[in-house]
Amino acid sequence: MNATTKPIIEFRGVSKTYKTGTHALKDVNIRINPGEFVFVVGASGAGKSTFMKLIVREEKANTGSLIVNGFDLMKIRNRSIPHLRRTMGIVFQDFRLIPTMSVFENVAFAMHVIGADRRKIRKDVSAVLSMVGLGNKARSMPNQLSGGEQQRVGLARALVNKPSLIIADEPTGNVDPNLSYDIVAKLTEINKQGTTVLMVTHDHNLVRDFQHRVIMLEEGRIVADNAAGGGNI
Image (cartoon, rainbow, N blue to C red):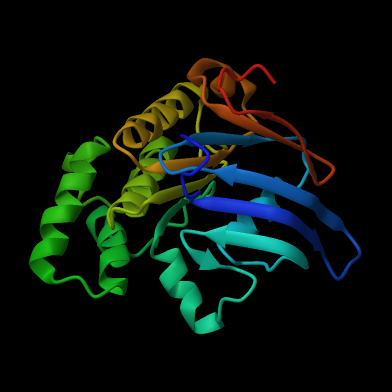
């Protein structure tokens, strides 16, 4: 990407201090351009969770400028936050599936929220379940699935509205190493189709194997940014 490319995420001098006095982020400056795949790494307490929470506007920065998908997150009104979140798909470590809904219904729920019509829901949910290898599990309930399958349902849910940005917060944290590799391979495949992917991980083997850009946080500061990829941070 050249310097004139408009970033999909831009932090300028962003700091976040919680009411407890914890300085979670300190003067963070970063640009993530459309189509990038970025790993965010760092020890526990480095600021990774706060970094992600600011992007989805679960938390607000104290100082600086933060633009995500064209939304100014320092000025955004509460009623506009759902519109921001509809531009992104979010994959959680703990899956967050609705236990009383089938696989199909869990994924369809994301489309119901934005008012999609029934025919489009049926078509798009079936397509995205096939994409993540769960076409034969549409009627299954979450408790009938393995951890890896549940995470793939979460991935399908994040993808079904065709977001420009995928936020994946430790998506491999609750699955075994082989399934971790499969999930990141699927995210990489999605990224190659043009979707920006931002993924927090503590798994340095994945970072090494997939050779994407790596941002390292330490005590709330960005201490390394391997913008060329390669994972050797």
